[in-house]
Length: 326
Image 1 (cartoon, rainbow, N blue to C red):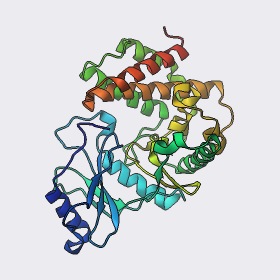
Image 2: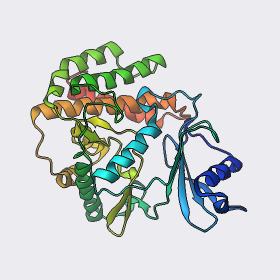
Image 3: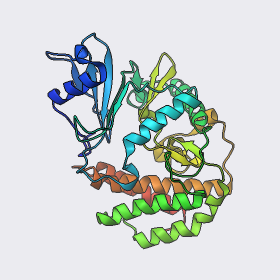
């Protein structure tokens, strides 16, 4: 996926990064040692073969001159914190951080190296699998997501703080930031921004039911899951995590909108009971948050076609209908 947030670097700079991380003896030469992994939407990622043949992945944060959405600021620091938390407090498989550099001495952004995961991307191969195979992975993903949500935080919001004492204060700030991002770029949502704020305020009371901050991966789509031999071998891309309501996880989105797939196996693996009326209201707010981001980020990413924008605009119409808004 093309995006102006991808901070591509020259082979000479990449070699300097490799030397700093692994030593000058591991710097490759010749051709064929470098390949960009192109399916990401935000950071640039390279698959690199070191001098001794070991394969690693290098992720580089967006350049500082490119404006990102409010919730994306400091995303790589969030990912590094997430990887540490997950590795320390769960059994969910994640890549090991082999070297991280936030000095901005070799390039203008944060970057880190991790081992290359020799496996298939679930999102890429999903359509080639049988329905039974997809269910096995979706169910395993639900179980893994529940374990991620077992991590408790001290407050709602950013992993590094400062947080909010209530989920209502936290989420209304989060979705308010998204709307402010859209207004700043005059993004046409098809709905008046004032109407959206009124709708959120009218439903905010349902957020009070959430009283314990839990680790929320939020971006755990099937395209961030690596699989091999019938099991999940790694979960990748953790830069959007926060402490909040586990019901906000991506796997529950299809409970609201069929366009996001069938949630049955995920929910079964997660072990979640049928949603209550209050949970359904919360879930709709979370789907609203997601589709607003999907619309507005197309401007910030500099998309050259309207496919995502058009698709997300239709999803916004559907979620607004769930709230009874024409």
